[in-house]
Length: 152
Image (cartoon, rainbow, N blue to C red; front, top):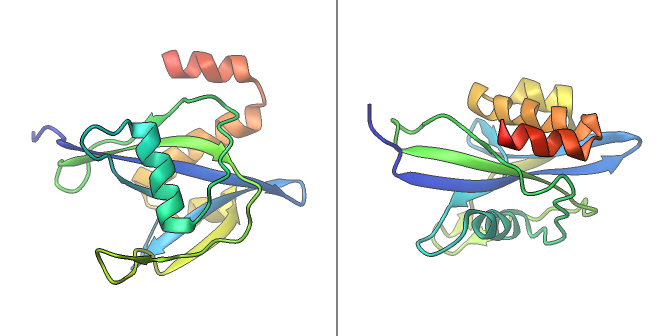
Protein backbone atom coordinates (compact mmCIF):
# COMPACT_ATOMS: atom_id res chain seq x y z
CA UNK A 1 0.00 0.00 0.00
CA UNK A 2 1.27 3.45 -0.93
CA UNK A 3 1.52 5.83 2.03
CA UNK A 4 -0.36 9.12 1.39
CA UNK A 5 2.14 11.85 0.64
CA UNK A 6 -0.17 14.79 0.01
CA UNK A 7 -2.59 16.37 2.45
CA UNK A 8 -5.49 18.44 1.14
CA UNK A 9 -7.33 20.64 3.60
CA UNK A 10 -10.78 22.09 3.21
CA UNK A 11 -13.89 23.28 4.93
CA UNK A 12 -17.40 21.95 5.05
CA UNK A 13 -19.04 25.36 4.77
CA UNK A 14 -22.59 25.66 6.11
CA UNK A 15 -25.13 28.42 6.54
CA UNK A 16 -28.55 28.64 8.12
CA UNK A 17 -31.52 29.49 5.89
CA UNK A 18 -35.21 29.01 6.51
CA UNK A 19 -34.57 27.01 9.67
CA UNK A 20 -32.31 24.46 8.02
CA UNK A 21 -28.60 23.97 7.45
CA UNK A 22 -27.34 24.28 3.89
CA UNK A 23 -24.02 22.80 2.76
CA UNK A 24 -21.83 24.37 0.09
CA UNK A 25 -20.79 21.92 -2.62
CA UNK A 26 -18.58 22.67 -5.59
CA UNK A 27 -18.63 20.69 -8.83
CA UNK A 28 -15.59 19.96 -10.97
CA UNK A 29 -16.68 17.89 -13.98
CA UNK A 30 -19.15 15.35 -12.49
CA UNK A 31 -17.64 15.28 -9.02
CA UNK A 32 -19.07 17.26 -6.07
CA UNK A 33 -16.84 18.17 -3.13
CA UNK A 34 -16.24 20.83 -0.51
CA UNK A 35 -13.73 23.65 -1.05
CA UNK A 36 -10.28 22.16 -0.45
CA UNK A 37 -6.75 22.11 -1.75
CA UNK A 38 -3.16 21.09 -1.14
CA UNK A 39 -1.45 22.17 2.07
CA UNK A 40 1.64 24.07 0.92
CA UNK A 41 5.07 23.51 2.54
CA UNK A 42 5.25 25.41 5.83
CA UNK A 43 1.51 26.02 5.89
CA UNK A 44 -0.74 24.72 8.66
CA UNK A 45 -3.72 22.64 7.47
CA UNK A 46 -6.29 25.05 8.94
CA UNK A 47 -4.54 27.98 7.24
CA UNK A 48 -4.62 26.08 3.94
CA UNK A 49 -8.30 25.24 4.41
CA UNK A 50 -9.20 28.91 4.96
CA UNK A 51 -7.08 29.97 1.98
CA UNK A 52 -8.69 27.40 -0.30
CA UNK A 53 -12.21 28.48 0.65
CA UNK A 54 -11.35 32.09 -0.17
CA UNK A 55 -9.56 31.20 -3.43
CA UNK A 56 -12.30 28.87 -4.67
CA UNK A 57 -15.43 30.69 -3.47
CA UNK A 58 -14.43 34.22 -2.28
CA UNK A 59 -15.98 33.45 1.14
CA UNK A 60 -13.93 34.93 3.97
CA UNK A 61 -16.31 34.98 6.96
CA UNK A 62 -15.81 31.52 8.42
CA UNK A 63 -16.89 30.84 12.01
CA UNK A 64 -15.44 27.58 13.35
CA UNK A 65 -18.17 27.49 15.98
CA UNK A 66 -17.85 23.73 16.52
CA UNK A 67 -14.15 24.04 17.32
CA UNK A 68 -11.17 23.09 15.21
CA UNK A 69 -12.21 19.47 14.88
CA UNK A 70 -11.68 17.72 11.58
CA UNK A 71 -12.37 14.54 9.66
CA UNK A 72 -9.78 12.93 7.42
CA UNK A 73 -10.73 10.76 4.50
CA UNK A 74 -9.14 7.52 3.56
CA UNK A 75 -6.47 7.64 0.85
CA UNK A 76 -7.60 8.52 -2.68
CA UNK A 77 -5.98 9.38 -6.00
CA UNK A 78 -4.24 5.98 -6.13
CA UNK A 79 -3.44 6.22 -2.42
CA UNK A 80 -1.39 9.38 -2.78
CA UNK A 81 -3.73 11.87 -1.08
CA UNK A 82 -5.92 12.30 1.96
CA UNK A 83 -8.29 15.18 2.63
CA UNK A 84 -8.88 16.86 5.98
CA UNK A 85 -12.17 18.71 6.42
CA UNK A 86 -13.02 21.27 9.11
CA UNK A 87 -16.55 22.62 9.70
CA UNK A 88 -17.40 26.34 9.61
CA UNK A 89 -20.49 28.48 9.37
CA UNK A 90 -20.75 31.51 7.11
CA UNK A 91 -23.33 34.24 6.73
CA UNK A 92 -22.37 34.66 3.08
CA UNK A 93 -24.79 33.29 0.52
CA UNK A 94 -23.19 34.79 -2.58
CA UNK A 95 -20.43 32.60 -3.99
CA UNK A 96 -18.09 33.48 -6.83
CA UNK A 97 -15.99 30.97 -8.72
CA UNK A 98 -12.98 33.12 -9.62
CA UNK A 99 -10.49 32.30 -12.34
CA UNK A 100 -7.54 30.28 -11.09
CA UNK A 101 -4.28 31.90 -12.29
CA UNK A 102 -2.73 28.43 -12.75
CA UNK A 103 -5.63 27.09 -14.84
CA UNK A 104 -6.80 30.23 -16.61
CA UNK A 105 -10.39 29.27 -15.68
CA UNK A 106 -12.32 28.62 -12.48
CA UNK A 107 -11.37 25.40 -10.67
CA UNK A 108 -15.05 24.49 -10.38
CA UNK A 109 -17.91 24.47 -12.85
CA UNK A 110 -20.78 25.08 -10.45
CA UNK A 111 -21.72 25.56 -6.79
CA UNK A 112 -24.85 24.73 -4.83
CA UNK A 113 -26.13 25.40 -1.33
CA UNK A 114 -28.03 22.22 -0.45
CA UNK A 115 -29.81 20.68 2.52
CA UNK A 116 -28.18 17.55 3.91
CA UNK A 117 -30.26 14.94 2.05
CA UNK A 118 -29.76 16.61 -1.33
CA UNK A 119 -26.04 17.05 -0.70
CA UNK A 120 -25.81 13.40 0.34
CA UNK A 121 -27.29 12.27 -2.99
CA UNK A 122 -24.70 14.20 -5.02
CA UNK A 123 -21.56 13.20 -3.15
CA UNK A 124 -19.29 10.23 -3.71
CA UNK A 125 -18.63 7.89 -0.74
CA UNK A 126 -15.42 9.61 0.40
CA UNK A 127 -17.07 13.03 0.51
CA UNK A 128 -20.39 11.63 1.79
CA UNK A 129 -18.65 10.21 4.85
CA UNK A 130 -17.32 13.68 5.74
CA UNK A 131 -20.75 15.23 5.07
CA UNK A 132 -22.47 12.72 7.37
CA UNK A 133 -19.85 13.35 10.08
CA UNK A 134 -20.39 17.11 9.84
CA UNK A 135 -24.16 16.76 9.87
CA UNK A 136 -24.05 14.68 13.06
CA UNK A 137 -21.96 17.37 14.76
CA UNK A 138 -23.96 20.33 13.47
CA UNK A 139 -27.31 18.85 14.43
CA UNK A 140 -26.17 17.56 17.84
CA UNK A 141 -25.85 21.11 19.20
CA UNK A 142 -23.59 19.86 21.98
CA UNK A 143 -20.08 21.31 21.90
CA UNK A 144 -18.86 18.98 24.66
CA UNK A 145 -19.88 15.96 22.57
CA UNK A 146 -18.05 17.50 19.63
CA UNK A 147 -14.82 17.78 21.65
CA UNK A 148 -15.13 14.16 22.81
CA UNK A 149 -15.65 12.96 19.22
CA UNK A 150 -12.38 14.56 18.16
CA UNK A 151 -10.48 12.60 20.81
CA UNK A 152 -12.14 9.32 19.83
